[in-house]
View 1 (tube, helix red, strand yellow):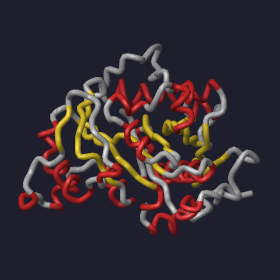
View 2 (view 1 turned 180 degrees about the horizontal axis):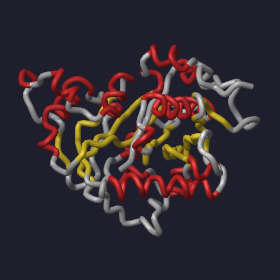
View 3 (view 1 turned 120 degrees about the horizontal axis):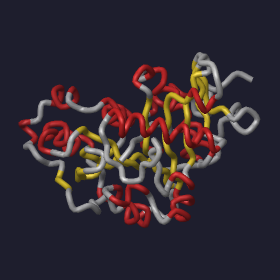
Length: 291
């Protein structure tokens, strides 16, 4: 299950702050140098994002996703999702040919039209939403970047795009799955136990597993957890979520198709670290395109 997210908080808490310099006049959500982030707007761009996902998840990482066809990673959710794309404008050719990163964004209103959230196959996400009926939820997933572009600048630009998008849609809570490699949770006992001890979601935000193959994160006694070693063993994305202030469900779920051990990340906007507000700007203005 593919993967997830960052944003900042201040303007979202009030529900009315929007990025003044971003929007339909340019279509761009952010720019750093020759890289631009925006939503896919044509069928060619959406198809290119699916081909990039296939290249990373299937060809590079060996996933066995059943919905892949013709070199595309595609499922029934794609039609109702927004697809965030990063484009290298320094490369020749069409924008659709120069997509180097992507994220899939599924808002709760669109999830109703598609029959639910993608992550519902692993976690009982509906029960979480039912406990917070006045909150607007956004599921992020299927994130990937070409190997040559896996840098701080690219990730920062993806986060910029998500932040601007969330401001535009008054999102209150982000959810989604983040992955450890492999299908043996015990191989990640140290970092999973660290997440349980230091970042377990409180009861009102916790999510029970829906899939049969799950493991409790609480695999080691607290006195056996070396924090430095645990953080060193974590995928960079999960460490990033920790810095944001994200919390995690108490259960890891094995995704055999993608060959991963997944954890559910829960990030209410109001709990995001203030330093990310200052970094991106409460109106998503730091990396906004000029003009």
